Length: 279
Image 1 (cartoon, rainbow, N blue to C red):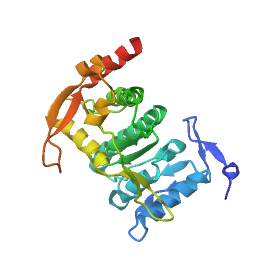
Image 2 (image 1 turned 90 degrees about the horizontal axis):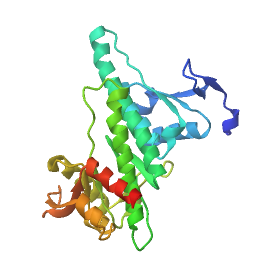
Image 3 (image 1 turned 45 degrees about the horizontal axis):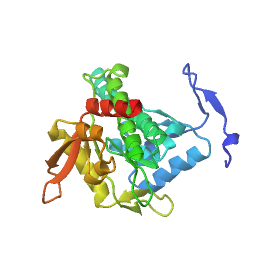
């Protein structure tokens, strides 16, 4: 099958959503003798040929099947499919335990999908899912990003926070989910961490690593967002930015000395963004 038009689609139950008559199951993707690059290629090739129904289970091959399918659905592929997971508990106790973990998987899947849409809508040129994090990349001219471009990135963060704070209303979670974010600006290299048949290009380098470390620093700071020096300097001498962000020296893992960062909360960020619109 080489053309998407050759695939047949049917309505999935009472959802009103049409999915491909043929789907991709996840069991075989995590088998030990199946290379991860091959698993990713199988899923993406199926989607490219019109398959939109993906089926998996949280404990197939001790979670490896869902992990590999998750990697295959990065780079925009998640938006093209209907993804289903299931439990396989045979007793009430086991089913209850798996149901809790299944709900968590649904929460993470929803968050990844919607966050990916948000960052791309706000100018992101590439996004990846790493563990429980989204890495989003914005590319700029050689002269560096303008203040308006940083405003767009901050707007994406604000929208992701709105999304995140609503998840406990969609799913039976005990409390709202809290997120943090680190933004860093600088040169990085594009490296292929995949293989010849399944390339997986990612930005690499100290500036990328620093962004992750800045996010980690928010957990101890009591605030939500941390900007690196160059990112903050891109905002210029805007007095509103000076009031919104608080300069601190933060300890970053892997760095011998504390580095300067500019931190704020989502509440103060929203006030800053509103002032930009009103101005």
